[in-house]
Length: 570
Image (cartoon, rainbow, N blue to C red; front, side, top):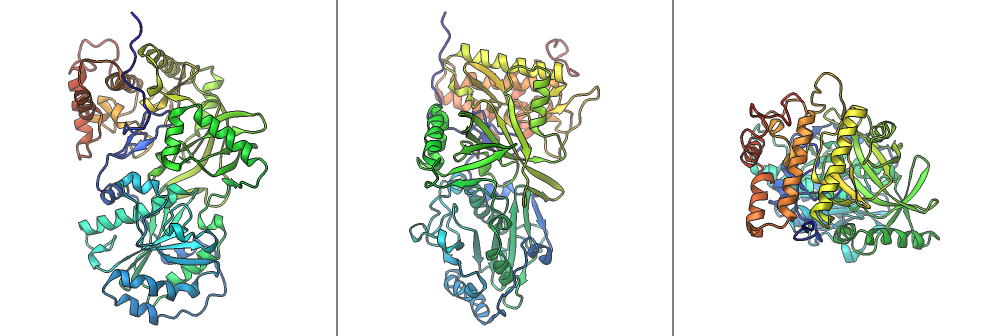
């Protein structure tokens, strides 16, 4: 009997399970574990993502995030006093822009962006299916285009105005009102739009409520903010804008290690054609790229371990989220050796071995079905390390020798089974030969290249000793939809081999349900997936997930007294 062919192949990414650590998000089935939100009211979804990720910072320390700049004029407050007394928020924008003009470098402009949707904010659309409309935008005059007044791809920062006291994002009350949550989510969307659309290490924002102002600095580890101050009597806002507009791109938070290649560069056209051909060779990557960036794009030059690579924008979408590793995966072109490869750019936890070291350890032990790591290093330079609330992240780049395809591109169940078998072999050899436990088995972390399966994304792996490993971080590692019953019921329990093997089972179950031929209707199949694999957002979501899996595989399938395949202590 010939192998069964899946009902369909993926042409447009759909919401699927998430990458680690745990978040209330879902990822696509792509090899680089792109992520998607379950659609919700935009501000609330963003606010939930940022809970417990704020850090208050002293005003002087905040200003010192930027270098001092001499020559600022004496501050005049009269105009700001009048503006703060205006009842209508929209009346404040124009006079505020005029009042602050003298406290910017001459090459900079403040723009009223309140009536214009973001021309490039794919990240905001991703959260809410509608573009953002911030109140004020700060631009370098040379980058401002009147035809796209609001443009998160070129703006330096956004400013937000409110007139009602209950809209303060950090009120003194112990119980956070709903309006404050809404403001937090709104601010998060504005900060995140810039972070997602540009190559940034940090993003600033100012928030004005009557005569009170707060300053924000967003990083991949969280958001720092100041106490409110009266900007009609204190010069902090003026000094902040003066310093910012007189700072270098690196000091302002631009990642200058990603160097734009201009069309006038002799290598531009050649590199562009090769990169586009690489995307076209993988229709799934091409569809993702076109969906978020269109046909024409910026080419960047980046150096990793003395290896010069050229990339377009990333084909993954995990970086569209405000905090975390911010993983971006690129099709990269090594012009010197004329070779396409994968560049993974992310922010790693500095406490643990880098993913590059893990790949090299696996390679040293001869572990099969794992890509070869060609290069990897922490990025040197300004603000390539960030720390908020004791969480320190380091900007890291990794180069792998293959750009694989996701499981959704399998042409038959036979091929799918072979790829899963290859990934299982990689997992077995990594554990037995190198003493490494993966800890994040998911549909997105299994890919194939030239019909060979590969197990990727070893960022959350650990070295195994005779003592069961404890959780490395305060957040449980693993992809929620594929986590074992044990870890869902007891998040503090150590992650063991049996948990990864159980995750492999759920990957196969999920993929078979979604793509294999079956007598059930598509509605029934989708309802099954939503019931068993979709994040609910409820406080007891972990418990619900465990119950759903017990119902799926039978109450004694993994924990019964007669179980022989996988024991509790394996």
